[in-house]
Length: 212
Figure 1: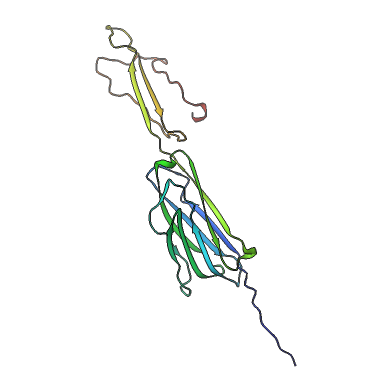
Figure 2: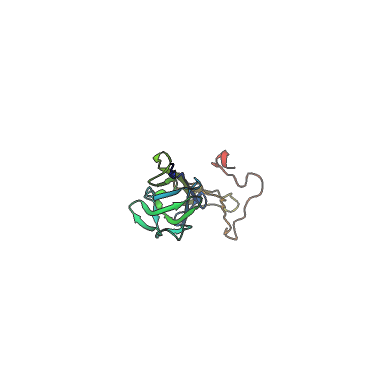
């Protein structure tokens, strides 16, 4: 007499990838993130999957509930909840090789202007390999320059034929930001003022060598 018994080894292998649409943003922009989670172990089903992103920096404001795509319709569809610091969702099953994508937007505020912001998303389930929590992060840089410009003449009163000397000082006043594609002009001189000719007629100082 003999008998047999079947067993199923069901250890999932979750993988997570978090990305931002691009790296550099300006204050007021809506930064778009995507989090992709997949169970990479063929033949397994991840049980009680939890995915969250609750480490958003203070200067990134979540706009609305994230959207979820790719979750199999045969299982209970997860509901995304906003929580302090970001969002959280839970689904009862995630079959192997079925990537799900969570997409969300955050508004960049003045608080993070001039700094790189890093935050991470994580995923876990009841039967993940080595009981591990998997995570991935994404970096963005908020770069909005704020200009200060000051134009002065050497003094107020001049004689006909004298060379009036002007100085224009332009400064980006926000630490950590880099003004790009800078254009400085002075195209509204009165008719009675003629710009001198020659290489020394206009001089420029203070431009960092690394940005020339």
